[in-house]
Amino acid sequence: MKFSVGDPVYIKSNQEEGVILEIVDKNTAKVKSGKAIYHVFFEDLDHPYLNWFLNQNKLKKQSNLYIDNIQSEKKTNRQSVLPFGVYMVFFPQYKIDEFDEVIDRVKIYFYNETPKDFTFCYSAKNKNETFFEIENQLLPNSEFYIHDIAFENIANSPIFQYKFFETKQPALETESFITLKPKKLYDYIDKIKYDNHAFFSICLFDEIKPKPIETIIHDDINLKKISNKQDSHFNFSHILNKSKYEIDLHIEKLVKNAHKLGPSEKMNIQLKEFESALELASVTHQRSIVFIHGVGKGTLKEAIHKILSIKKQTKSIKTYVNNYDTRYGYGATEVFF
Image (cartoon, rainbow, N blue to C red; front, side, top):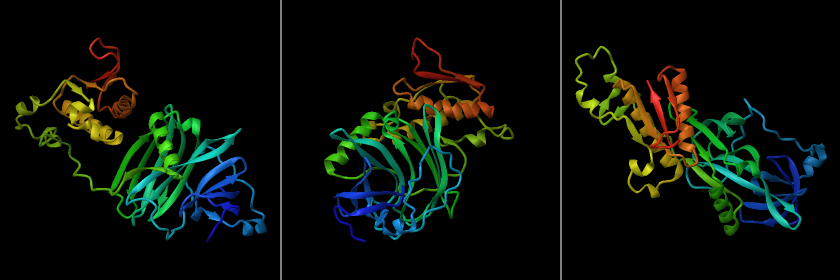
């Protein structure tokens, strides 16, 4: 379906009508709807005549709802927009503020540029309060509209948590989260403006690899076997020497060339080290262990405290504290068993 500048159009994803202001590239156009200006894929546009005929051009109000079940999108045979993988895609939506074009809100999508079918769980949090949740299916080579978020809210560094697993092989799963810091957000926006692109994207994964057998390995020692009380003849002396009472989780203490890693890669390494050391301390019956996470933006501390909160509920640990200490300030958390 071909479109030209000045054509009236119907935006299928949000059921709004508008007019094409500019053909951005072969895949997208700039569309004005009321006072808002959108960057929209051509496949999300339609001519509005049928909609006029059916008298269905009323806007559907959107709100931050908790959605348990939304009908899955139909399969599409579209060409890939991004390289192989699954992405979180952000479309800034513009409005005219006096004489300037400013960002009003951001549309968020999942893009599946693989031939696999995924089921996902997603939530968005701001200041530890969940304002949006959804569980649904992401079909092969398709996109899924998730929700809109006001620009001032996305600039406040919300946390986008996700979990994906292959629909046909539920054992294959991956989960993590994304936090867009203001500087990074504005870097993305400056780049797409400079390149005249409609969106920026973050790759979540290219494939889900099978998890190892559910035993925790630390320095080639099977901790699950060690913790088995029946294995009373096991010599603990060499593993006790490996246990530590203080773990520095600053990324430069864990890996070389940390500057080459992205934020999510760094976080994954830090959390793996944290969980491995915590398990080892538990198995070797330590009274406590200190994790040095630093102060910074508090992202690592927040993730660690979330894990510890769950472990405290399941009585895997007694408690944990983040009190002021002359050595670390507030940059360390002590865990008690």
